[in-house]
Image 1 (cartoon, each protein chain N blue to C red):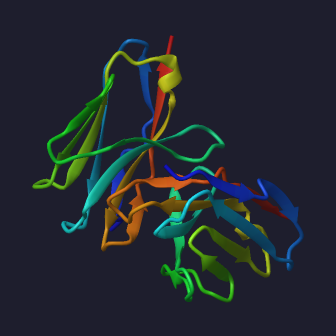
Image 2: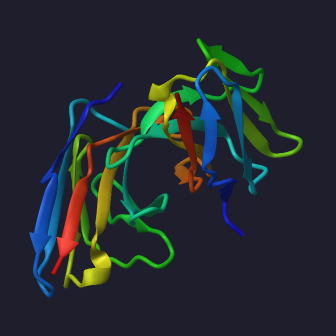
Length: 115
Length: 109
């Protein structure tokens, strides 16, 4: 199964700034996703990172706020822009080897605190 | 209505007990099903996939009921180390995975 490295593992940022999270997979994967997990809650899908094209965003998430890149089949970035305290959360990168018939694997998450 | 629903618990059980969780999903076209385990402040980790015929892995048994649109997880002989949040995950539309809110399990000595 894919091994996913995500960084930074945590950061404290000032409001109004941006944070870019990197996700590196040790093998080529079909799908990469970005999730957010707010304290005490389950995971919410932000977007699907599409290789070589614009990400597909879920309702309530927009490209201006969460720009995503996926230049190849092993790497993706998520930027959280114009930070506010409400963005404080854990952000998780995940990947699936063969689409929805194979399980998701996760990076170890980025814990973001906005002050 | 949420795509995937779970009883949040917590389920408080003694060591050695058998405990079962259910998870319901709303989309009848769902194609794949999984149980994940998430420890506090950690990322989710795959516990097991759920197959139509049901499947077992040691003390863990997962079942799928497509007619009633639910999946279940049974844990036998609970260990202290089983204490965690268990997440139900459903895949559909070829490229989407949706997570339940999780069921918290506390196994006590």
